[in-house]
Structures are given as structure tokens and as C-alpha cells.
Length: 148
Image (cartoon, rainbow, N blue to C red):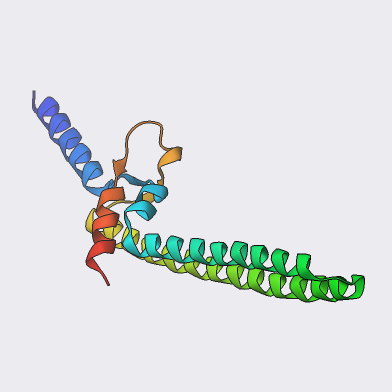
């Protein structure tokens, strides 16, 4: 009887100890967080605006091209337009990369805060979780909205 009580007590301590040490795994739906983050939404709008500017640039250049009469003018115009278009596209790619990095870093920082606050062991993408885990997407969105 004494051994049974000791075994039960030992088992209880082991179970409680292992639960206290195991923080668990959180998972995040990055797309959901991005959609709920105002800074990310404004970045998307800015990038879309720049894309539309490039499209309008091409429409305007096409009209100008049609007005040219000689092959030499057309060739010079094509070369100039090509350089201008390349510069605009490069600027758009650079802007997109900067915005994506900024948003990712801010989401990652907020996720790290949630990790510490929720005493989680790790945070993974929601697509790798089959069963279990804790969805922290909404907590991260709240953190992001709370910080400027």
C-alpha cells in the first residue's frame, strides 16, 4: 500500500512537471495576419498603385508610338521607352521587397512576443499542423494593431 501511494505520488509529480515544462506549439496563418494588419494592407495598396502607374505609362507610350512616322523615330522611342520601363519595374520590385521585409519583420516580432506571453515552445505555419496546437493568428493581429 505504501509503495502504491509512493508510485501514485511520483507519477503525479512527473505528469505535473512535464505539463509545466511543455509550453506547446502555436501556429499562425500568415495570410490571415497580413489581411488583418493595416500596415500590410496599406503596403499592398501602395504596390498596386505603382503597378497601375506602370500600366498607364505603357498605355500612354503606346499612343505616343502610334503618332510617330519614321522608323528611326520609332526605334529611338522604343529604346528610350524600354529603359524607362525597366527602371520603373526595378523600382517596383525594390519597393515590393522592402515592404515585404518590413511587414514580415513586424509580424515576426509580434509572434515572438506572443510566444513568450503564451509560454509556447515554437510557432509554425498552420499548414504543418494536422492536429493540436494553439492558433495564435488573432493574438498576433491584436499585437500588431496595438503597436504603431
